[in-house]
Image 1 (cartoon, rainbow, N blue to C red):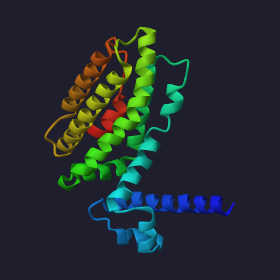
Image 2 (cartoon, helix red, strand yellow):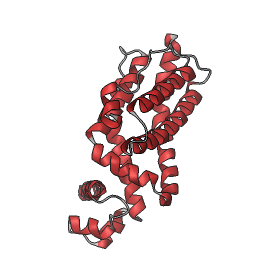
Image 3 (cartoon, rainbow, N blue to C red):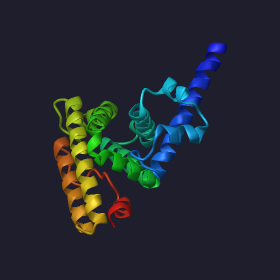
Image 4 (cartoon, rainbow, N blue to C red):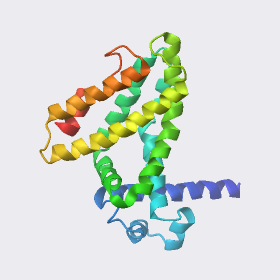
Length: 227
């Protein structure tokens, strides 16, 4: 029993560090946030921090894992719904992620700053690996279902899922560039919209899906970020 209670206490304390870091990311940003800020926020010792995390970057990686879990929270029930066609599952999963990003706009913006920093190349690669690890199994299930339905064509659903994730990574990088350019008034909403249409076209072509059968982002979300 004591061991169980110790494990629960460990988990709760680790979560507290991640919650505090998430708040500080939104208010100060990653570069300005120090371990001392975190300790003051929680009234914790430096030893307590290093009991859970090796470094500030290790903490950030744990926070990103936590955020990814939240962003994909609705994916499993959607993918497991036997009544939903594969194309609709893709639409639902990515629409849910888009809505979550809008609801967590301040947090997403703070993570964008981390992502764009020249000092964070290693961090970006770790996030890329995490994205591949998390998304490929989910997309593989959907692609396999779509092939069985005759809606998609693929010789290897898992390989197709990996190609889709690589497309998503490239899309996210370009979308971030467009967001920054839009904030600076260098591109229009129509420019961003045209890019999203091209991205969706590529997504459908990789799957061999009928044009217009998949919708990865709704107009309200697009306008929220690029309007």
